[in-house]
Amino acid sequence: MNIRGKELKLFPHEPSKVIRSKRFLNYDFGEFEKFYFPGSLETLSKRKSGRADTFIEDDNRGAIYPEEICNIDGTEFHMSLKGVGSTVDPYSLEPLNIYSIGSLSNNTQFRNEIESSGYHGNRFITGETWLRGSPYGGQGLELASIALNTSEMANPTSINGFRIAPVISIVTMEEEMQGKIRELFWYRKYGGDFVQEIRLLPSNVRLYFHASSTVGNNISSVFEIFELFDNRKTTDFMVNFMKSGLAALTAFSRTLKKEKPGIYSGLDFFDVWLDKDAVLSKDGTIYFVDLEGVERRYVMEEKVAEAVTDQFYRSLYELMYSYVRIDEERIRRFGSPIERRTQLQSIIEIAVENDKFINTEERNGKMDIIISNDLKDENLNNRFTMLNRVR
Image (cartoon, rainbow, N blue to C red; front, side):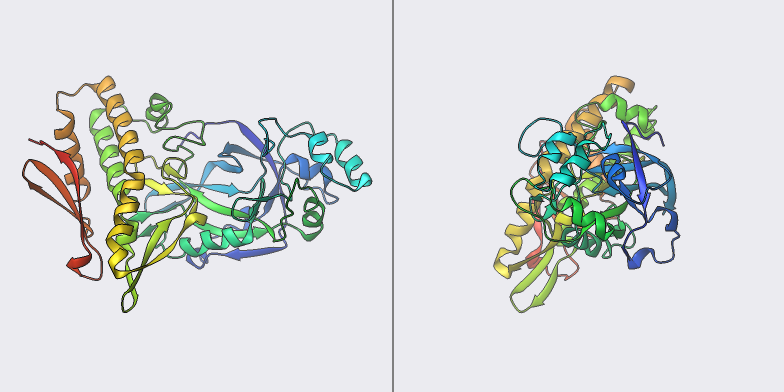
């Protein structure tokens, strides 16, 4: 598949440590399990890589390899890296450069080394503690470990229908370089290990934010990328989109467990969002990418319904906004006399036909979806209205 975006040269180095996902122990990713330096670190490294690999920029601190590296269940996947450096000063809108980075060091020799390095770009990994605990521009071991643990719940990309872009391994930066860049910070020094997540992505097309191609911003380009050249293929794409989207909105119910009397848990999203933290495959399936924010949420029995409702409505607008963009482009290209609510009802009914966690029901001029769970406890089921005045 054609991966579009700005090219990025990265330099592979031997990691000091590799943690491989137990789901991918039988796959051979050896040549890719490196720690990839941006050009800024390569110029400062005493052990030069000897080669540069070409990636495509993805998200703020990510990159995606333009060629597919494996096929899983009929879907081609690309290698993706999280933690390859950021390009903008975190406390302004100014691009980073060797002088703004050099000014962070109190070591005159190191500052001179940075400023005389010859690096002309603006992508850096720094030692600034960022958000929940990762180095700005890089990735931290704690968050990467959460992503890996969530990935290992899948088999290998589905958690009861909730589709994820799996982390195949965590690689750690060499100790000497960690020590250097740890001293490059604005206010708060990051104290953990500098790592990168090596992930598998079906594309770099996101729903709305953090990508050069998104459903929300340039849907015509998305149709070209995914070769949606006729109405039938586009309709199938929309069915897969809705099927996987509803699965993401119901991840808590799909993973609901009774921990002990009165206490339940299920997967929920923390500081991650469907519109910017998920990508699409060629067939329309939504894969959640940034798994560092996907963890179990523990609630009292009386709060289960509230947790399910909160998760569903938190991302429903993002799902529906993207669905409308796709449908409007389908109509523009191929035409359709079908009324919009009738069209959506048909898409939903097909999408959930074999979904054991979602059923549909029409009553009183509306269509509801009923969300169930593996505990077979109807008291924990939830109902949401998806459409009014259908047919």
